[in-house]
Amino acid sequence: MMPMYKLLATGFGIGYFGKGGGTIAAAVCCIAWYISRAGSWGWWIILITLAVLALGVWCASMVEREWGIDSSRVVIDEIAGMGVSLLLLPVTIPYLALGFVLFRFFDIVKPFFIRKLEELPGGWGVMMDDVLAGLYTNVILQLIYHFQLL
Image (tube, rainbow, N blue to C red; front, side, top):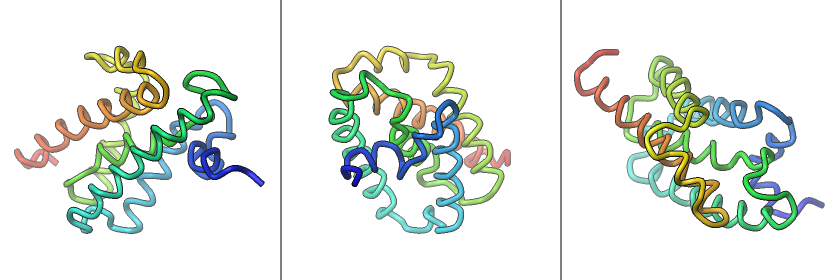
C-alpha cells in the first residue's frame, strides 16, 4: 500500500505518468475546478488551496529523501500553483484555458524570480516556484477580468 504522502505528492498517481505529469496535473486541476465550480466557494477555496500548499510542502519534503530533489513524480506543486492561478476569478472555459496556458508558461520558463525560489530547502523549493507562477498568472487574469478583456 502506498504511503499517504506519496499518494498526495503524485496527485493520486498522476506523477507516475512520466514526462508531462505536471501538465496533466494542472489540466486535471482545471477540470476539477470547472466541474466543482470551485470559484463559487468563496473563502473556502482559498483555505483549501492553502491546505494543498501546506500538504505539498510536507509531501515533497518526505519524498525528497527517496526520490531526490524536486522529482518529476511530485505534481502536487502544479495542483497548488494552478489553484492559485484561478483564485477569485470566474469559473469559465476561457479563464480556465488562459489560466492553464499562462501557468504552464511561467512554470516551465520560470522568469521573474521564479527559478530562484527553487533554491529554498526541501518541499518549500518544490512548492513556492509554482505558487509564484500561479500568482503571476492570477495577477494577469485579474487585470483581464477588471478591464473586461475576456
